[in-house]
Amino acid sequence: MKCECSACGSIFDGFSKPISFRKCWPEDLPDSPGVYLICVRKRGAAPEAALRSLSKLRKSWKMYAKYCEDYLKLLKRISDCPVLYIGRAGGPGSRNTVSGRYGQLRGGHVKEVPLSALARLGWEMEIRYRKCQRTETPQMERRYLKEYERAHEDKPALNVRMPRGE
Ligand SMILES: [Zn+2]
Image (cartoon, rainbow, N blue to C red):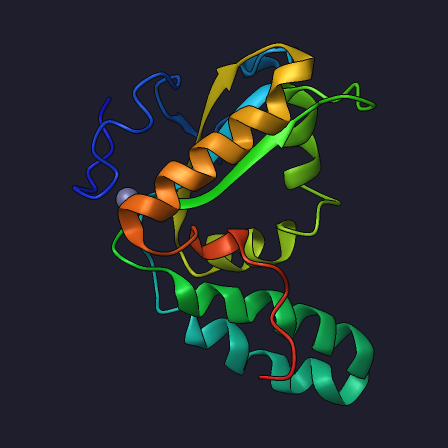
């Protein structure tokens, strides 16, 4: 299946077909190192609602609210392109796999904050992967990020580092 973004074109042709994030089990994904994409399947409510919902949390747990806010600000960067994130699983010094990384994204990975916020706003996400050798993952990740950035003149919405002082 082709990405519907004209800027993406054929960059991600070598990736698996999309698997619904919500319906996926870790077993549906390969126990192999690789690179993966998190893409939008269906858009939901505007992300601003997630930031507004923080006002209550700010009163009860200020530090956690600040932590969430920094990640939720990334949602404002979402463009027409469905690709939200390009990542890698496993690499030199890491025995992680695509399947293992998916488990972390569902709970415990820093990107879980914006992803679960989008899910609560009715967004549906999907994951696509491309298996590769453990030693290749860093250069594969760099390659796809570079190609993406060249085509869109920006990184995927969730690939920027945590915004500070905004
Ligand atoms: Zn695109």
